[in-house]
Amino acid sequence: MLAAQDDDAGARGIEFLPWSNLKTVHDGLELVETAGHPAGGLIIDVWHTERAHTPPADLANVPLSRFIGVELNDADSQVVGTLFEDTVRRRRLCGDGTFDLSGVVTALRTVGWTGPWGVEILSDAHRALPVRDAVDAAYRTAVAALT
Image (cartoon, rainbow, N blue to C red; front, side, top):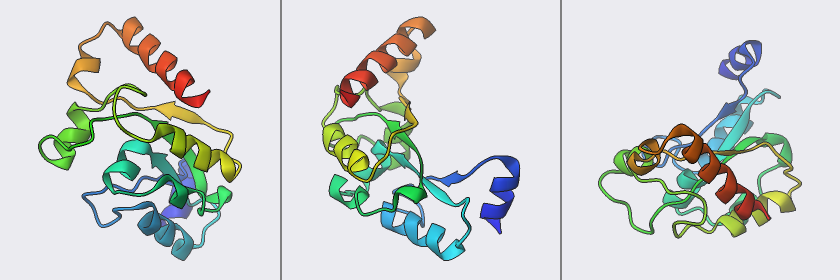
């Protein structure tokens, strides 16, 4: 029912969150598959997959039809504060942390993902930058992660 409502509104995906009932890509996929609606899909946020300890290879086992979008970002190897604090205050630009971005990109391309690729940098440091500089840095580092 929710997938049908989302489809009517033009929305299609769900993000799993490592502090929620949908902690992993496997949990998210189970929900989407159980719903059985063609509009149901997953948004892959690298921060969420990494913090849920999901190996990039696991993403290659998700049917391409279930991917809606991908959000690229990076972070330190250790969580600082709570998971919520870490996700909204300490994300890093692509390549400035320890996440296996190349593994994630390779896994998604293996199943045929061609986009869209987005960037989601939630951090105190990034928010402090002038908008033009913040956008340039996000774009530049995301392109480097994709090449």
